[in-house]
Amino acid sequence: MPNIRVLRDIKARHGVRANEIARRAYLYVARNQSLPPQVRHQAQLQLNTFGRYTRPTTVKNRCSETGRGRGIMSEFALCRFQFRLKALKGELNGIQKASW
Amino acid sequence: MAAVIPSRLTALTRLRCSIFQTSYNPTSVRTGAKYLRARLRGPSMVKYYPAVINISQLARQYPSLELVNEDEEQRLQDIEDRKKRGKGAPKKAKTKGTFYNSLGSQLLSIILFLNS
Image (cartoon, rainbow over all chains, first blue to last red; front, top):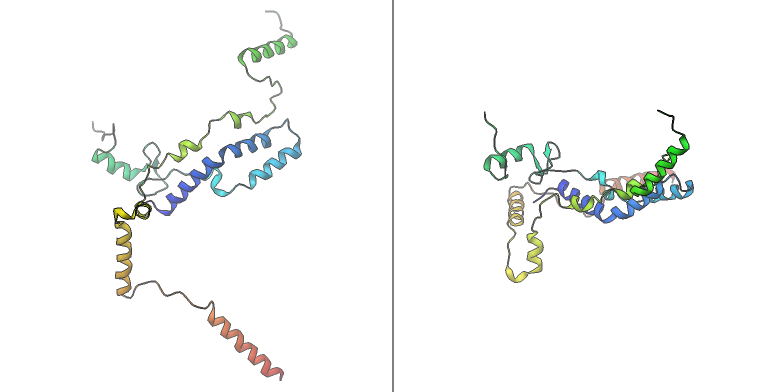
């Protein structure tokens, strides 16, 4: 069962996907220097009305096993310790302990 | 090498833009096109965590299967055990802030008494 931080992150991810196109359209208008300043300002105000869980920067890659936020290997969605445990158990394809 | 006339150079740039279908923007004005050009990141973001089967939801949808959510059963069992040891959560207060309410009424009665 994922912990609350992971659940919140999942919520943010779904929010980003749902609002991405609208946010991009407003971003285009707000950042376009060839448009009149009033229009750009209105677009920026509209961007500010979007909620917290619609911004892509709120999304953080967390460990899918423990929910840890630091030391994540994004490719496996695991923190460093869970990565080690799984790798030693042989559950990660193509990963083996180095020895020379 | 002979010096190239600037107007010829700008004409070359314009021609290059028309050939390669890029927008002619000699003054580098920010058009915001990069926000439209960039790929959408949402679909791959959603796929980051592996899908988890929600057992309690399944049990609610299909009562005939008689599924047992072991984690939930364990949690309820733990709460029961804690209550037996007197370590359970306190009961919810029926009235909010009874202490301060009583204090206020006492003060009011004192003031009324002094005024009379």
